[in-house]
Image (tube, rainbow, N blue to C red; front, side):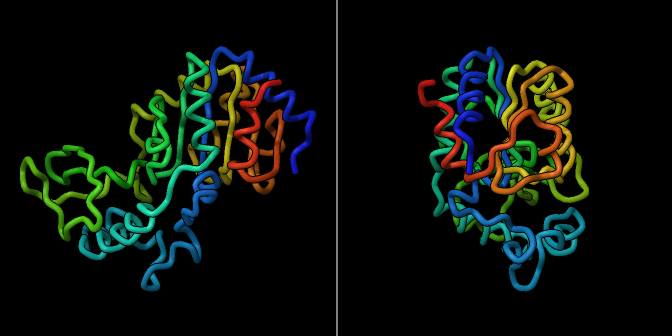
Length: 244
């Protein structure tokens, strides 16, 4: 449960902030019914996500990997943005210097209307050519097995950052710039265990931001943030936009 006085303090901080950065993780999508695809949630034909979301797995058996992503795309296609996604869109509308950083690949932030964002782990609705590198959007469900690039007819892969791959430099640059210039940093639904995002709270705090965490349970970063609110994102985040 959240404490009323804490909510009031955070609402006031947001209302007076000139620059806001929001970081979201699996918890916000879980409120829309999207599984984490980790642990038992990620099991598919007895494969773990860690077994399939790798460059080596795609090289060995691209058909198998694409079948798994088709399963994920079909599942995510049935989900809709929730009240927390919509509240973040409104926060973007109100704040001239706003940036959203999401670890989620489901595209729900874009579906809700977020435009100033970095999808640091990629987007499941984007595909990338393994040869020429061309990136395009595809909402085909199911996508053809095996999909080919419209430009050079080579194999496409999901435009996702897989285990063992580095995040895009431009996404990291924009994220660090936003974090280091924030008055307020909201961290919503993240485990605080996946780097480099696990270090974002420290970056914002060291730069002088007021850092608040919203999560179902305490995380490794709960001790270093200025405020930690426990509860569902879809219940708490909309309250932050109500009049003080």
